[in-house]
Length: 294
Image (cartoon, rainbow, N blue to C red; front, side):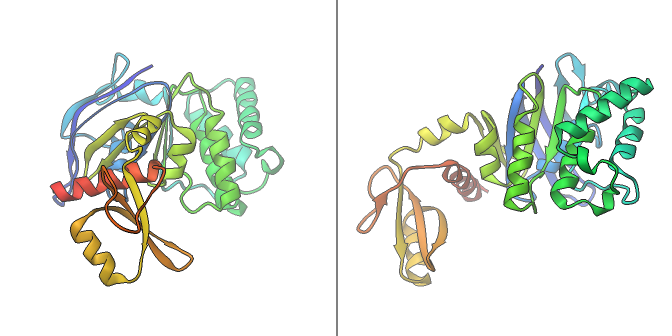
């Protein structure tokens, strides 16, 4: 299974250009789509999920024309949007049963088996009869994945799924995503670098609707080996001076002091020590390069 996106563009009626001639090839397994808020990730996911039209471009799911054969695509699609609502007074088991009917699973026995298996898979079996309005944020997200998995989809899209989850629920949710398998396309759209690092063998970084980078996180990190340097700075004035003369990737507070990370082929000066690069460096370096071009 292959998702092919060619020269996709989308401008909203208020003039915001959400996607700019964007092209991507996404195969089976987990694919991470990284970008800051407002980068165009949700616009891209909504377009792939057949929820909005594109102005220009093509999307193909193998031989299916996503922009034209919407009904056929929806039968193969599982989608967990960023804003996922539930009927608060319905139980999980009743809601999943209702959604299964809408997905076309009309055989009662088949539907019962599917719903029960998904409740077990998402660790919601013990609370299946509780109203969804009583669920925690993490439980609602796991229910969201359960409904996305109805009908054995071939393409699964999850949009900012771990935002707002506490660490234990985030880990539980990521473990659930990783267990989905490698026979389907799973697109994880997020601004949280750790989610992509932990789950995805391939990724893309987008900003302002444009593709900045695409490939393996491991390869992108390896390309920065020996080129990332760090040091602490005394005050805001020193930080401003360093920003003028060096390519500062990012800044962090460490024990109350500001630590900067700099991209350079050799040591940028006194006090700098080499640092092992990580995916956050890849992410912020691409964003900084993009901001300088735009």
